[in-house]
Image (cartoon, rainbow, N blue to C red):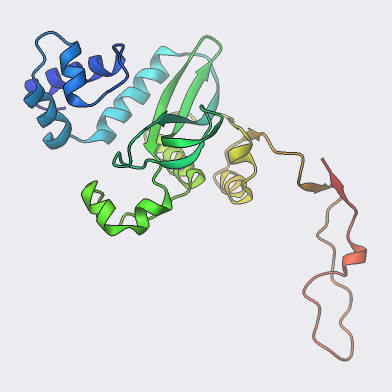
Amino acid sequence: MGRRERRHWAQVNVQGWWLDGDRTSVEPMASRIPGADVQALRQFVGQSPWAVEDVQRRLARKVVDRLNKPDVWIVDETACPIAGTHAVGVARQYGGTLGKVASCQVAVRVHWRSAAARGPLNWRLSLPKAWIDDPHRAAHAQLLPGTPYRSRTDLALELMDQVLTWKVPALPLVADSFYGMDFGGRQALRQRRLAYVVEVEPSPGVWTEDPNLLLPPPQKSGRPRQYPPLEALPRLRNL
C-alpha cells in the first residue's frame, strides 16, 4: 500500500470495522480506537491512492497457500444493511445473506473452499442500474465516468476471469439459484471450460432427449423452415 503511514491507518481502519458498534463511518470508528485520529482516518479513506487489485491479488494468493486441499470455488454475495441513501450502491434490493429485499449494499464474492475453511479470492461492489443512470448521484459518489452497468452474474464472471489471471487454480464452481437460473451465466461458464454445479428452481422445464432435430425437406412454396415443427419436438418435462 506504499507509505508506512498509509499502511498504519489501513490497519486502524480494518480494526474499526471489526470492533463492536453499529456505525462504521470515520468518527464513530475513531471514537472506539485509542489513539485514532479522525483527520488521518478520513484522509486515508477519501484521498489515499493505492491499487486495490494488488491487495486483492496478494490476499488471494495467501488464501490459496493457507487453505490447501481445496474442493470448490463458491460464488456468493454479502448484503450490508444501510439506512441512508448516499452510500455507494445502496438501494432496495434482494440480499442473499439477508434473505429478503431491503435497503442495502451488495458485494459479489468468489470464495476458495477447503474441507476445513473458506476464504475470499475476489469481490466487487454491485452497482444497481439506478446508480449508473443517475449522473449526478454517480458524480457525487465519485464513480468513474462511463462506468457501465453490470449484473451480478456479469460481476461474478469478471471476478473469476481476474482470479484466473492471478494463476489461481480453477476449481468446480458452486452457486445458488440466483446465479444458477441465469442461462447466459451458465453458457459463459461452459465457454470458459469451468465445471459447475448450480442450484435451479423447479419452475423451468427440461428435455430428456436432444431437441436439436434436423429440419424437414424444404417445400416447393413458402419460406424454408428455420426451426422444426413444434409437434415434432420431444416432450418438455418439469423438474
